[in-house]
Every structure is written in structure tokens, then in C-alpha cells.
Length: 321
Image (cartoon, rainbow, N blue to C red; front, side, top):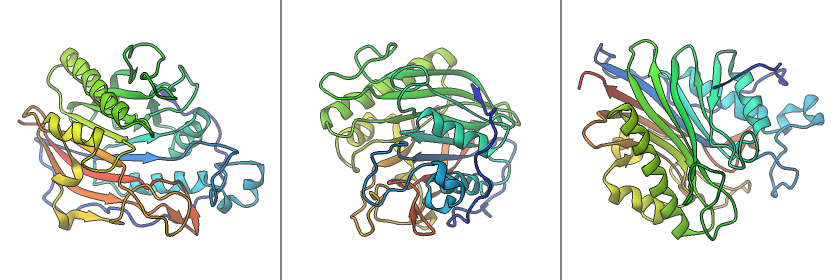
């Protein structure tokens, strides 16, 4: 686990768009655990920016932080966390996050926030798929990063693609209830449909290995699949019968936010695509209940804070099953 340990580069935060407020649904009982799951591709920190893309953070941002993405990303995540149902731990799966970006986010969420997950180039190098968590709410019993390739235990990439891809897997224990569960987070290839289909199968295999070691624990998965519903990796998930997408499990009147998709680019008016997902295990050992679902707007004060929108899901785990 990596704790937050540095001073914040931020002097202020900004108003975030509305996200799911604390629910007024049936109260939590002693045989259930509420969780808030978040997936968010925050776009890697780069000087080679797309049209309309603001810097993540640079020297000039100190005098004009509204012109940088990082303060908005942090503030949106803080708002999402603060709006979680009472007593519900929040797990945040990020994609494309470089080490400096993870540091920026974690230290600004608070001293108790930590993360798991190595970079795709090994250690702290390259893009990460970290899982962020509040150590005052949950503890990590086990963590691992696996590569979505034929050699998942070593830094490697699937044949025929340009970059390594990883899945981060954690076994968590809720400190209040003692309930254990598995959450994983991933980011699939952007260009090759066959590779994506193979990568998600590898990810599912790696999750099942962890589940075999720790028992039939409930499982959830978040990630940027780089494909729309019904295609390649998404179709593999549907046909596997192992998990179902939170979107499908949530009643339509409990969905909120933009309906056109989660990937927008940095250009206003560009047709959005739904590429980012939260999945819940349905194999009978994972008694999840979908409570609410939201796609959160990624434009704050006229700034595209990422080329993706965050997806937020409130779920309930029946611990007495």
C-alpha cells in the first residue's frame, strides 16, 4: 500500500457538478455492506496535449489553477467521496494515472487515503490502474498487479499491441463489518479488438486465481474497456456469465448524469462513447444489489478535466448470504 506523504500543491478547490447524494432508500442493516465504486480515466499528464486539453499541473497553475485539470479532478473525486451513502467506503479505480498524478490525487484526498497498483512498465513507471481507498474504512489484505499478456507475472504486453496493459487486484476488508471482498481495476488496449477480448479473459483468470486463494469472495471490476457495449471485451464479459454490468443491473430511474457516453475527447460537441464500466459478480457467491448509477460530467468551469467522465456506482453487498 502506498500512503499519502507529501504536501499538497493545491491552495483551493472548485465547485464540482452534482453527483449521487446520500440515498434515502432502505436503511443499512447488520447483514449488508454499502459500497461506492468509482471508475475514472483521468488522462495521463503530458506536454503533447490534444486540442482543448489543459495541462494537468504546471508552474503557471499556481496563479491560475482554474486553467489546469488537476484541481478539478481532485475536487470532483472529493465531492464523489463526500456524497457517498452514510457509512459506505469508497473505492476509486483510476486509469492512465502516472505516479505524479496518483501522488497529487492521494495527498489531496487526505492523510488516510492510500492506493494499490504498479505501473504498466513496472514499479512506479508508466501508466497505472490504481485502486484508491480510505485506510480508515478498509484495509488491504492482499494486492497484486498482473500484466494482460501471455506472461502476466512479468512486465510484458499482449502480442501485436504497442503498450503493456495491467489489471490491479485487491482483497479488501471493511473495518466496520469485517466483510471481505475483491475489487479489480483495468484499462484495455485502445486499438486492437482481438487483443481487448483476450486481455479481459486474462484479467478474469487472474481475478479467479485470487478468489481461489482467498475463498469465494464477492468480486467487482472497474475499468476503461476502450470499447462500446456489445463489442469484443464487453461481449466477452456478457457471455462469460461471471459478471454483469452495473448499468444493466440498475433500474432506469436510478441512473443519473449524461446519457450519451463516458468518453468525450476534449472537444465540445464530439459524439461521446460509453467505454467505462463497473461490473459485479453474479455467480451466486457474490450477492450484490445495484442501488444507483451515475455518469458524472467532465466539464467544470468550462474546463474538460479529462477526456473521460467518471462513473459512480452505489452497491449493496448482502453479508448474511
